[in-house]
View 1: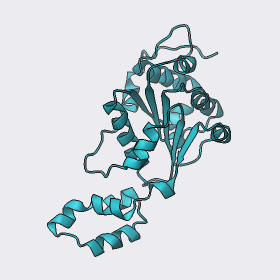
View 2: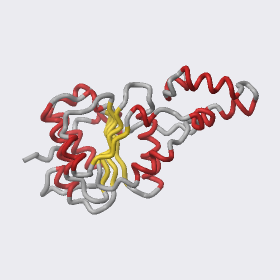
View 3: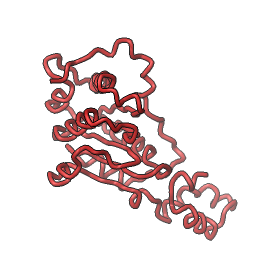
Length: 220
């Protein structure tokens, strides 16, 4: 049984829950955004090495949810979250920010019984390796209500029972192969330079190939 805890005294952690602001200059990955928004009751796992635009995609998805009046909350994980007590405090804060407060239930049960649509974002999960903490994240994923969403960004596959979620049809997976830009998206990224004549289409094609279509490399 998880004991509901107060977040009093943890204000210094508030930066963890803000999430990055959307960048208008980024190309919107609309197909992936739509797939995630429509994946009711599923865990979305965005797994790829650094530089593939995982966080950027997550911010675009979050914005899409908010435009649809769906409450969202965000947490960026860090190594200190391997402490179970600290993670429980952070989990309470996340649930509170979603407006899911039920003193008779632990946070995971409160999420499971919540009937209002919500989206919970957990970025940089690769920082967490403690089995007891990952087990809590797995439990959230397994008990998502029909209109609940859990979106995770990570550089590596987390040890949290993904096979079971996959078999049950409760997992949407996006990896590096899907996050790579296609040529149309690369042209869209460099549209201002192309319009101004600062770049030629042939040069964009070379950049597209040389950077291996990685988001961060194209920006650099």
